[in-house]
Length: 350
Image (cartoon, rainbow, N blue to C red; front, side, top):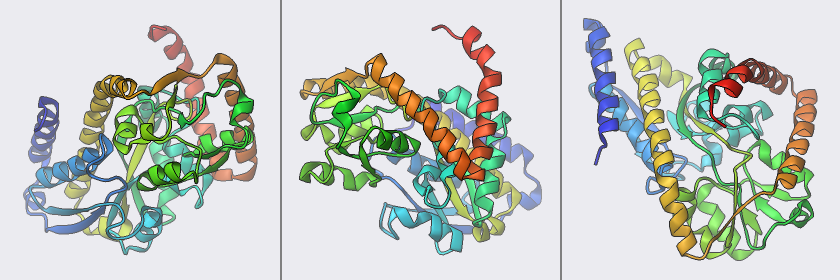
């Protein structure tokens, strides 16, 4: 069932596009698209975000964008989405740039940044601080059109079988970890690996990994991690905000009219607004349910967080020295945050 929020977003977008459409745009040719999801449609928050995006695209285009959803792995593994969209064998994929740091470590910055901003500040950098331009420029080299299409608020930072009281307790652990936060954990003696959502539970159950982070309480609950690990740590220092992307092959993008391209971008913006509201609304209920299942919710001590942040500063220096692209994105991001600081410090209650 649609919420009033979803109906309003769709109705406003449709009205705006219809009013702006020329007669030529009103007769757009039909473009058929395969849409590969990174997350099972049944997964809380992230699953509906994908199907909602498709629903908005179909409605706002008056059906001229004919989009078909495919579950993760139905076409190809999620780890291959980048290459498939790049070479045009896949039309579009809902994913996150941070999964593809093997192409360029700078891609991690477009999904989430350790000890980074909340959703408002991150979006402000993207929309008004140059983030969008950098993201599009870097993906264009691979014939990928990247559009921000998902956003969630803070994640949890890990499920552990044992209580973590000092940074020494992390040494030797094998842990699933995402993005630049993994570089930080490696400096603390953790052996990290990046697993797709559907692979994590079995790896944790079989002991292939000792601990894991994935996402927010609603999603972690649906994946059943509480059945294997009982200590659940907050805050998600590595992912205070996470932004996902819709990847579209350049060849397929070029088939679209300007009106249809506008539809894709507006559909993603409407979906992000809905997803952020939903992610904020549902976490407390999931946390209460997890507690009822015997999960022990913990917060990192200030001492441990301090060490993690120090290691993060080391990662920044190392990656900036190794990657010109990382330095370029980091310089843009950090300058915006420095300028924003006076507003952050004075405009918000602590």
